[in-house]
Length: 176
Image (tube, rainbow, N blue to C red):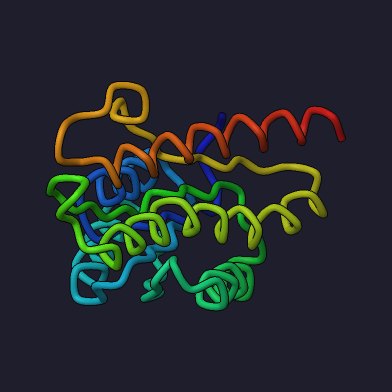
């Protein structure tokens, strides 16, 4: 897709793949990159780099596990830039340990962020994109969705769910 002039939202932008993705969009001449994650200080630092690359930046601290916060993220992006062309679901957390030993609340947190966070993003942006008749949603997956590793079951489970969610959504959109 053509990136020049596009408005992009990246969740999980404070580090890792999300940070690299946000910078790549800015360097590819996106109009604006909306930076979303929990760590506002890291987002502010990234915003300076995005603007240095020539794109406008908007920092929105958000926990993607909270559906209301994700809807507010989409609303802020539209208020500021008039539309969302690309939404990148990249926020992710992990926990390491044996299946028998991991605290259930830690497993739930991984699933809340890595699966429901993506669903919240889709549900927040899809109606906006449908109304405009265009848009791209990118769900960041992992090879661990199909080749799980020991002591990373929650992350592998979550990324397998993201793969299934993406396939289901793609099929639904083709049927509409």
